[in-house]
Image (cartoon, rainbow over all chains, first blue to last red; front, side, top):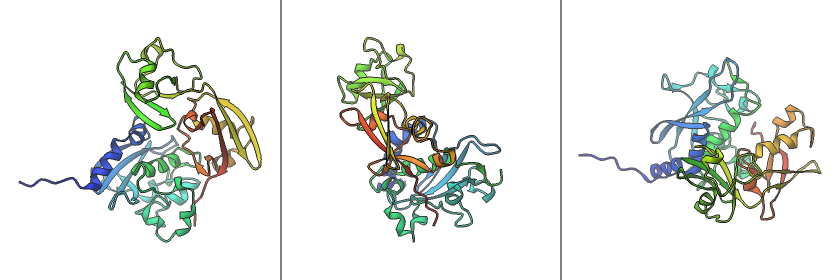
Length: 160
Length: 151
């Protein structure tokens, strides 16, 4: 008989998902966990209403090395594949953050470990823009994206 | 039912009994003697009534603290504006006021480029303003440009 032992990193993620900051966001309808097969997790993040745009975007996280910064990209839950570029959100700051031309597998923002690589200047930004090891975990990334998707900058999907 | 409490110590989700009173909520968050405010209200919930009797429903946000009003100062480009808000008001409403005609009168475009910060750190606009107030019921925010990470 084999038993899969939960790793310390998974245990830490579970603790963050059980914590008030994550659960309050779920209760308030800001985000929810869709699936988890560690180190991969798919979350739905609710978006403000825009014409011809979905009510949420899914993000597939690679949480390898958690509680180090993760990376994530928009995900198509139906096909279980990366979201087509035309369906990525856009508008204002989102045009830079959700930029499949830069990298279809990551978001261009300092919470994302792939984007942060090579952008040492970003480390001088206020702490709340940066991933904090020992902080609230994945909530930090979800909140950042939630704020963008509910900001006046957000205009809908690229091809919408 | 579950309610979400905001205090200076942070957020908590509390499981409360059907007959729970505001005093019981304050005790549960180690703030015995404090008042409990429904979101947006500057009138504390009455101690003699249960939460349900005062229309505090499952999933409601409440503030637990001692100040009925928070004296808010917002600084921007060398000027300051002052106002009072219920402790249970979302910081987002403070931001709306600060950007509005009664304060700094930002254009919609400029508003989208700004946020509120406390000690140089942007604040969570979804939190209740009492969470950021000092022991005297005062808080000073800065209305600052958002950081953009475009290069």
